[in-house]
Length: 126
Image (cartoon, rainbow, N blue to C red; front, side, top):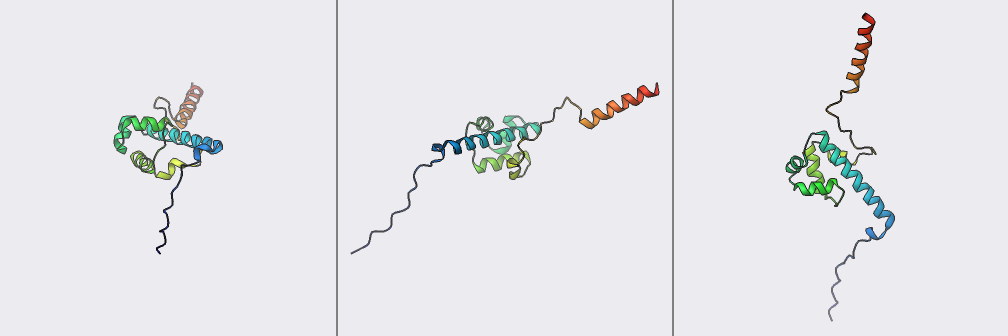
């Protein structure tokens, strides 16, 4: 008599979304990642269209990623990191604050200080 071959392991549906505490954490992490991706894109002066082109994804897909509306794959994360010229790990930095996006209209702090110092020096000369 032949023994029945072992049945392949069959995995059921994921329980992640059935666990409210875990689901909240995932949503929070996804929002943080979306904010960081957007900040990196803006810091490089890229439109969503140009960034999507550089990464090889559709612009609507990038819109959904930055809006925290979808889960992002590792492949897409890697492509975006490459498009932004950063190491993949930088997207997961321990920093709670996304990278600062420079305001092109404002002077750097050191330039503002120099300007203030030069005004004071100029007034002193008068």
